[in-house]
Image (cartoon, rainbow, N blue to C red; front, side, top):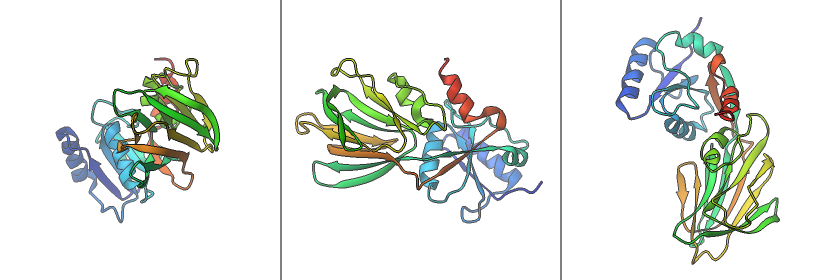
Length: 254
């Protein structure tokens, strides 16, 4: 079986660095420009950072869990890597894009693999107007914030604030309020992935709000437009016995 050109990358924790060094001695280390696959060693946070860094290289990423959380990772083993890569199942993810306008007039664009979230910056509750495809659906949400999650990200922050877990491949996004006060009975919505969601911050001087795409934060926002970017594809590789679809399904029964 022919070995593909592999580029190993590891988180900054020592066990991951040691594992990467051992892998490189056994399988070699290709430059990114000649690599056919990336093997990332660490936890889910490191996997998200790796996907963000490599998104425009369009290389498949095979993660190995060395850390506390490994939802997006496969088990770590030095053995049979070439065979595992050949047998791996590919999952395609489309990231969310947020376009942000701030109080200072600046405009920023960022990508999210898990979720886009709006959060209050002070002790004052956020007041946010929610539009779907330019139609107002929530005139004034009074809450700690609100988030829009992908199916892959629906098991993360979205799940912790009681948002729905979405099976992979459903072409849907989860829109979930964070500690809502008004409207009392609104628990969020499941939206088609082609929907464009707009958040308008009401009374922004008194009730300032930040917007975050995964780990990238913009403060003092006025407006956020969020949508799935179908032009970008992230390729994740999983062992057949540890599919992402099965993990997402199992999360609904924990």
